[in-house]
Length: 304
Image 1 (cartoon, rainbow, N blue to C red):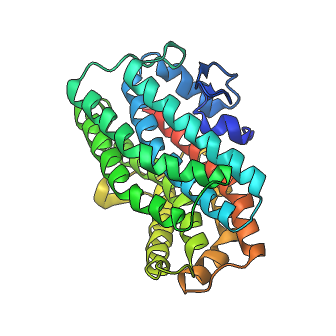
Image 2: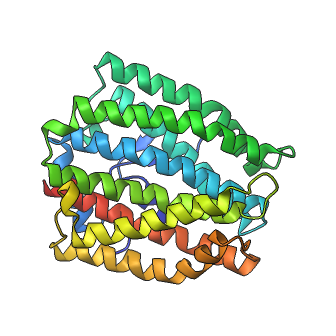
Image 3: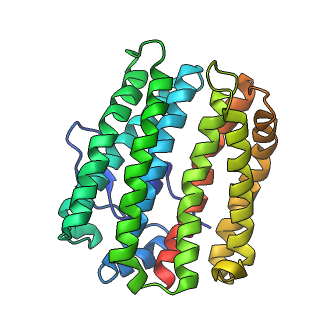
């Protein structure tokens, strides 16, 4: 399967964010069959793209948090800074596209008042988290900033979950079958979990983070069980087994990377703080794992 560059992978195939202070949406070349099909759907499948983008926002928050933690550990600092600021830019550009629309990706301006209010709530909750994360990236953070940043994730996740629920009720359920909706939900959340477990592993051993190994253990169990369910199906929620060869290829790729980092994550879940080599491995693999999972979301988005 053709791989997409990590920067373009994060941009959902239809736009990227410039590196300038003003986040600008610009078209890019569609580079994989999955993206081509999802992009074609975008002109008539506005609601599907909306659900994909909303789901992706939570992953971007975790990607910022994971890279912030890796920066504090001195792991690939310049690359981690670039990934953090990139996720920040894409998050803000996505909020603007959801609110104001974007012709390039076939996304109409939002007209539902409840959704608009919740988009504003997300942006209010994002600000304190964002300030903490960017202070870590630019080296101005004070002692305890990482803890403060993680404290701000709770209201931000609550706001994002409420937004996802609204989009689901107002738009998505009218377009998807039960099975397709379950597949999109599982695949979308796998992107988030892939970044969450890196952040949790990075925090193991920190003072005041004694709960993290248990949290990580739960994340690992959920990620692994959902990866299996996406491939084999889950009758209780109406999730069909994957049959599309290209989709199965993305799961193969994700599972190969998962098997490489799984031992490090299991040790961290047992309370063993990862050493620098283990953290370098997580930093190296977190983007290709996310890329494979993101391709799966594209395929599922474009199939129904």
